[in-house]
Image (cartoon, rainbow, N blue to C red; front, top):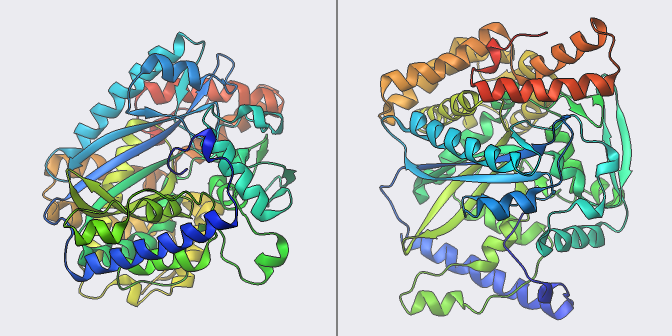
Length: 494
């Protein structure tokens, strides 16, 4: 949600925006010069995971206690997110080889167990789920923003740019049509982000490959069928995130102004294109100018941190985001994959990771890249079809026409992912374990969204519970099964 700001930063005027725009232009020029002069780190094939969590009480309702929990955790690996019921855990970068997925799984389990023990002292537990089904509209009030000024500031800036309430209109079996005065509904979206460090020349193929498979990822990993008590899309989080932070009033949307939650509009040739789009299309929400002059830093032989470019990029919510960063005094580029929901289990998260990293490697190195045979519009449509219909969605794929997502995975994409993991030099036992979970999920046609819907239907029809009572009963059972650790396709209903 952007870098930290303080209370002193809460006021911006036209002069601030003009200065920021000028500095942002300088950052862009420096970035492009660094690309032209080949100044980026190479040879380090690193991956990283960020996982957003929700805090629930003993009744399965959201627990607004992240301040107390974080105070007791006292670790930089855990951070706030938008709502008082959110946490985020960051796993340090790992080399993408050998037994990396089991190492990441163990670190995630350790972090989650620790956070859960601490949360228990505050009357709460942690859960990994795309949207907490027991959230309701009454929770979406300004008082439930996390206690960090940057969130309120971001909310106020988006509301000012939009000039009217935020309107959520999502179809599905039980359509939703509701307005809010703030962006807190975005806090209902809890996701996992996969980072991949790439070379400048490898960035465009990796980003294009990630865009091409976004729909498949969401179809297999959907885990967000309920919002405010209604059954909507299998991965409602996609539509919710797109609408909850949309800074465009209806007139600007009709004129084709780009949304801040954005799939994009074309395949790319180099990473600078995406940062140029940020500069060209999106108003600065947090126009805070850093003391660093990027041109002077580069000329003096120092590595520029490009703080304005990074801050602005953090307020453009691409489903696959470009990242410029500096680590150990060296600049690098990453692709941040943001399409998947959190959970259900740690094994499911790492199976999704193995499938993603394997496919990106295979597709980005293919002799006939998929993005030369798949239109960008089709890739975008695949994402929304997958979000609506989940594992049963029909997606467009080159050479296959319209094909069911699960069948596409079994027939074509799993072998590609396996070949990609081999190129990463992943241990074959790791490859088979985690891709085996994806295969079983595809064969059984069961993911987190399916389990949630079936469990709620069971509670309503077989036990006669109301929707609210069924959701309240389902959430603790979901959290219990997730903590037990088995992948979701094996979870019992009942």
